[in-house]
Length: 322
Image 1 (tube, rainbow, N blue to C red):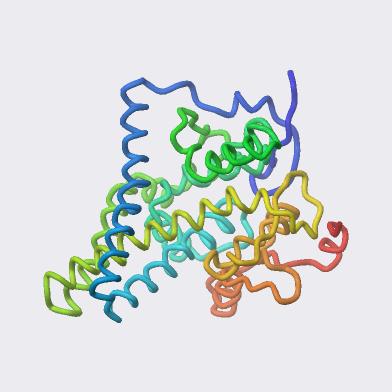
Image 2 (tube, rainbow, N blue to C red):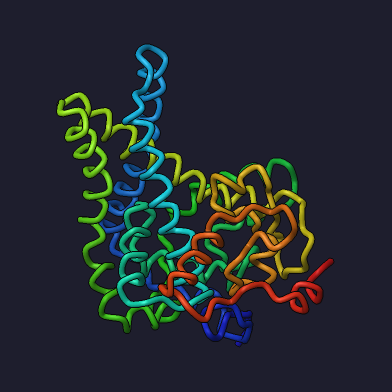
């Protein structure tokens, strides 16, 4: 049987596993597939339409400070749930966390509306197992290296991959999460967390302004527009950060750094160093590389909420320099 690399501890250590196809679940029922695609389509299209509508409102009437605050706070909280929680903690085990924080990170990551915690982690671990090779769920290089092929690949890596009938085996890639009762409970209530993620900004806006219009604009800016911005920021790491050519470290794929996204991605766009050392809690490891997520982890460590943090090691970094 052909062998391909996989992270044996599911966090970053390479070993061997069977071919990529064995890491996928059997095809779903056609009706279920159509339903799943419709749901994905709604979560891609609705925030986009809402953002266009918000731009029209902004042009004609402006945006209130309340809406700006709701949008900013909602974005920062939910993207931290993705970067600190779903990615660095649950996927790669870059640190250990107290139980209450573990559950909180799972909830906040789910409220980013990018999939349930177990699904998100399983997909991302499969991405690292086969990064930019056969089996990678969202490589922009899947169609070739010509300009046309790469343009097609970028669109696929950014959005298209979510519409494929290709489900990652959770049992193979996320057995540790499936064995955790707290996380399986959070995973089961994902639809309700989506509702809460969209409804809470409207509730806050209504209470602060004591008006139905405040509730509506809070829902629009803090719910739908925030989801649009967060989704495309995350998806840009999948697409752009596997194409641009800032690669100061050796990795077995085409992962690259893209500094313009460093702040809005909370440090996730230092993608080359991350793929060179996946379990490291800090992605922006070089001088001047801003990594907000690492700052959050550092703060939590000082508060005693997280421990055994895997901070950058000078010897490991030197060994990986190009």
